[in-house]
Picture 1 (cartoon, rainbow, N blue to C red):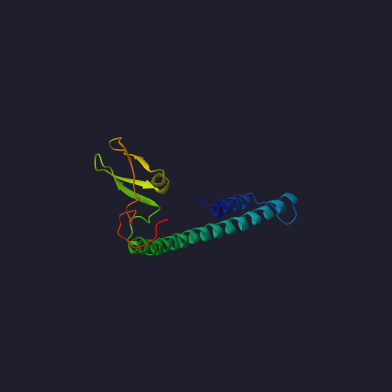
Picture 2 (cartoon, rainbow, N blue to C red):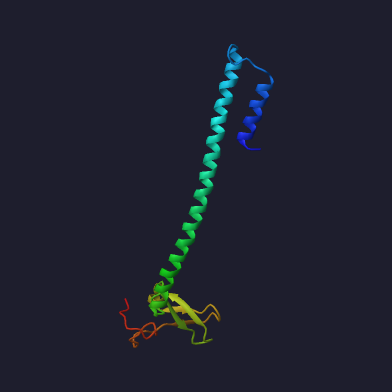
Length: 142
């Protein structure tokens, strides 16, 4: 039962009591209260309808934004083409087991890495390599 239906029921009960709304103080009070409740019920129904409409619009905007994000961010990733420029991570190969290990710049600066696969520690020597990341791209390494 909606608020408006409950107020209509209350109004019917008041009319069934045959209250004198012109001379009786109590009748006048109850009549005014029911009128106010009717207005509140209608306002609430309008607000609920508006909230539902806004929710639908928000869902549509969210879907559109997802489409835009997919186009914008997927193009950036595809056009980059450089393996070392993604979030400052570099890929090295463990000399013991051959596993590919992703390391960040701080580990690269430290110079030693422990392989998570075999546990072997090894030194990263980049002094004689021009292309530190091995990606073959033409960019400056910092």
